[in-house]
Length: 446
Image (cartoon, rainbow, N blue to C red; front, side, top):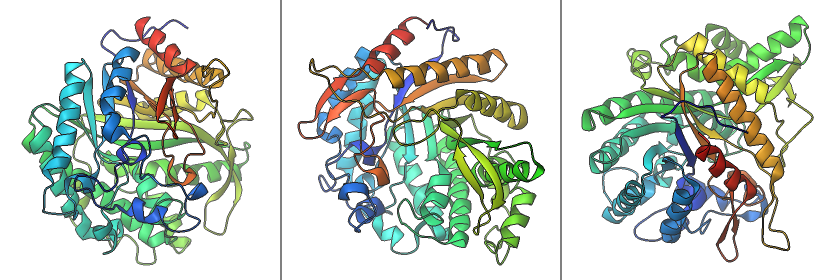
């Protein structure tokens, strides 16, 4: 497949701190709510934890060498809040900042632009113990994190992402209970969503004050919802799922407030017994602080069908018969439609694909090679969808493959592999897969 992307296109790959770093109790790092969650029986498949993960904390130079060989010009990573602020608030751990400072310097020395995500789901346990994202006060410690990190790294880091996937931080974690802290409380989940968005708006202002030349955005995760049939009931089901997953976050970020149809639906379902009582004067303008770019994460889409379930959400099925090993449908056309819809409806100044990838659990063959042809096909189809969207006018100027390497996949533990580099967790040996070589050649062909 030949690449026909703009000349200065950003080619990258992405990771997150808890999924790769390990060293969970070294050099002053304290526990996050994910460390605690992993210790609760039945929360994570196989009882897995991020205690060691990919040992990136000790092997980061080797990992940057892989990035340089890959030919990317950007790397998206996140910081561990408790590595920098062990108590979650005031006290600064200089060893934690030094680690990220070294990482940034070495990336730049190798011609790789750092893209820093402040929050990829690691809330300090002391803050979670006081209620975490369900409580409004948590916005202040997060804003302090943004201040500390941007003051220390802003002379070298120009690309900043406040939050990764607020839907996961709030609804997946507080309503479905799949991620830390594992709650199943609709009202707490919707409050958490608001506080994540509010803290985003607060952090944007702080980063811009500390780094006047910064490019600042937020990364949302999206699923394109297709009605299972043309019936009015299924059309309505898809609209509700889209409101639940996509519009609840897009609309306020782009100055439209919370979608009125979803507010009414949540009230009717009993999820907002007191309405939007957690939204105070000034919150919505703060959330809608203009972005320099919108980060877009997409892996799959769904088919939505009536009738609605007891929780007020539609029944959902994978978007296609072709699935990844995690069970998600493969639907590049839905990705293309999603990109166009975001552009034409919300008009972000820039769009960056901050995560796109697939879980296929191929391991080394008898020759030590990992021939993950299914991932290669997935990436081909999705890169083509991005290319078509650009040709259609979408202002997309970057693409980050998820992920650089196999890693701790949250509640799935180590049972799912998303990397373009295989990791043998027993030995920590890294083996570039066929998808790594595909991506390398694809970048070179641009």
